[in-house]
Image 1 (cartoon, rainbow, N blue to C red):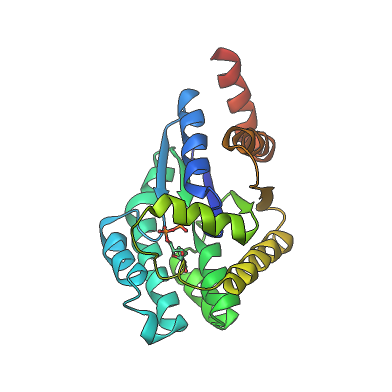
Image 2: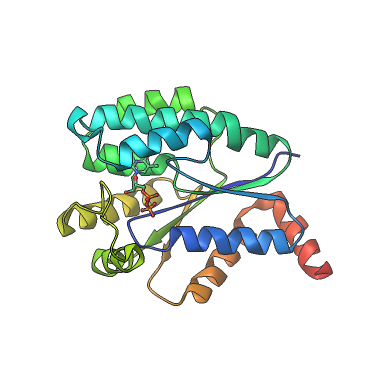
Length: 222
Ligand code: TYD
């Protein structure tokens, strides 16, 4: 049986990586095979493109070219990591996916939605996430967290943008959640890590249909 595909989205410092890891650990604790991965990156080719993008090297080429590069990275990631894992029956938990392109390059970078849909058709195709958790947090808190985590290292391409950019980012993610409620759930990320992890767990159990029974059975056994 094909595994489930869960993605985490949100602005800088919202706790995506932590929550993705906590969910993966919890699933693994129930004996479910999990591949924990992230974008941009998650495969050899995509990691090379990640470096070009996050260093700001592609910024002068404009948001459209950045969208193409994020999509190229995604295509490699899907081919070499995500699809093979799902086909093996593993669950894939991914820190950022196509909604990041819709929000950063689309809503904020003003790349035409038709271009983005075209790129999605070619790269993602049928491999849409079964569930997307969008972590929602005031940008003042998120940027502070991201700065604390960096501890001396330089901000990356998008962390360097101003507060207004991050406020628009938050609004754009809220819109993504509102437009696709079957796939996306907005979670308030202002709180203790373990409390948010519990909320994520409740959503995962409640949302993933057929897998729900399997999860409940594993939990009863654990
Ligand atoms: P990363 O260091 O992984 O940070 P974060 O912890 O915020 O995920 O950096 C990824 C950056 O790339 C982040 O600022 C969002 C941006 N990004 C896009 O602009 N478009 C995309 O499609 C993806 C996947 C990421």
